[in-house]
Image (cartoon, rainbow, N blue to C red; front, side, top):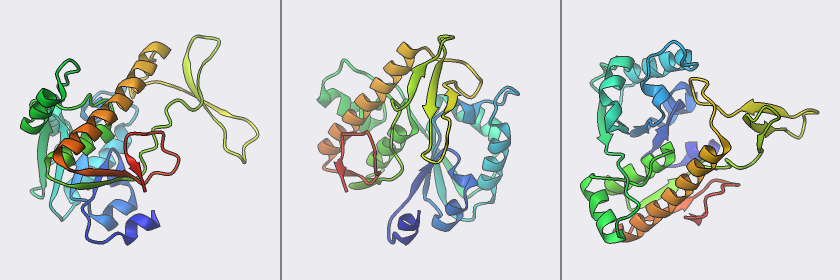
Length: 230
């Protein structure tokens, strides 16, 4: 985090619940990205409701210009759910339609026009794509580890879980793999999602090459192999 604080003359794009962290107020990002349906769903069973209230309050309190990117299909529900009325905030929507069958030339044409984008199954893809289309020629990734496969297991109840164990802990932690509403995913669906995510990073790199832009991954231990490491 100290490295981020020392960066000068750069524009920041942050994601998810970053506005709930004190660093958000120090770096004053120009861009923010939301992707997961939990940010657009006002339902009691959404287990992130308390954190969302803090997030939306932060959005209404910022005193600098900021653009929030989100999928086009969630714009109406987000405005109603968040009740953002801060004139400093501009909402920009992205068409999350993706096509795997088109040639690179057709795909890149659709990307430039905003007709489509790489399969945005993670907020990192959405953020990279948005910055490429905003005209940035150099993009640095920080905190994008994508270590999805580490500790991924199926327990004796056929439930997909992540097994974590810090070096200072005697017993591992077993965390069910569910969405914000408690729905479990199958191993097949989870692995397909992971494949789609890494394939989308490949598409982002190809699109960056097409635009003459560079993407550098500053994340230690990242499993993304699509971008040059720094």
